[in-house]
Image 1 (tube, rainbow, N blue to C red):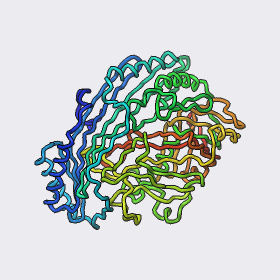
Image 2 (image 1 turned 120 degrees about the vertical axis):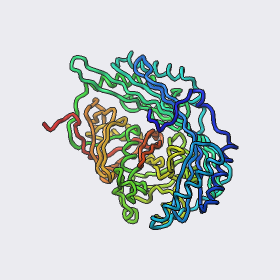
Image 3 (image 1 turned 90 degrees about the vertical axis):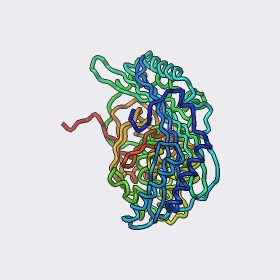
Length: 526
């Protein structure tokens, strides 16, 4: 595992936490030292980041890793400029010294800064706490139980005809304490879980192989997510089972093995224009890449330009109420959404999280901002989009949970399919590619089913579709209602230099897009 995850520890140590009184003493020492050094603003983040990875293949355990990283990050404004310093030493004198270092860096930065930082207000909230509402702490579940689950999953897949299978558990607990000169002392305990797998089937006579990845979503939940409760299952067309609030990993492994074998026999798609019916297990990635990223304000302003980070959705388009999609496309951001990866009560600047609209009836109405950007849009407060993946990293703008609202009319997935004469139903995420402005893109998937005259007829293979972002979203002709709404997401979304990762969810109901260009990924130019 990458070294930035921290030091390796025993599994039993994943269950401990820092004393709340110690965290407040450290924060107060840093705040006092920053003020004394001339800071007009200071925030302190005391973080303990715990991660566990369990990785298996067929009947073998490949790796079990437990990591911990604890320390203090201090950010200040002196003479209108930012400064940052961090330490893993947990003494009051140590954090005071780090605060003085942050102030010295800010003073140096002020000499070359062209304009002072304009920080939107974030009223102090005093001492508050928040915890991901979990029923079972994954860090308290014995490793033998986790290994047993994964090996049972692998055996089930192999018994159903798989040639190979990999399964994993990624578990995260972020214990974060935030304090600021605004008067906030915020203690948050954040939990996330992901259970990915890949099942492979091989045709031994030809050497051809096909894979099917798991249909689970990474979630902001506890170990209860793996209970496989019936209420968390969503049975779709052609009997494909998707999952919402609960995941039956063994059931999905058996289905994956059978579907991987079916993919070996599936005909290759004929390129052309198709109406696409996209399941939420697929749509999340299209939302993430073509809406979530291009509506990050730092990307719009060009701050990420050195890391494939600009946006076609420039500020003038907001002023013009640019027609980003059809009237059925309503996109909102919400860092409070239950079960989502990004769910917290307060962001890493102490801003209370909320829900707000980005696209309303197809029109671009807003972006995602943090405190020192809000004034650019004429806002008096931040949207609460600030995050750092470690105490040692500077917090900066990260994507909120960006989702597409369900359709307002009662529509089921079969209702969306019955009006399609020539189309493809796509389930699961696959390969993708998108340009630096988030304008031209290509997306694959896991399962593809041909639709003819309103009926699913057969499985297809080698499918990918190409889009120009506004044209694609304006081609949306139907969205299923809230009964079909589900979350997908990214456990490791990368951004920034030096790079940071964040976890973010994207919800939607199944949606239909007409006249989309589909290519055959198996074709060659030779």
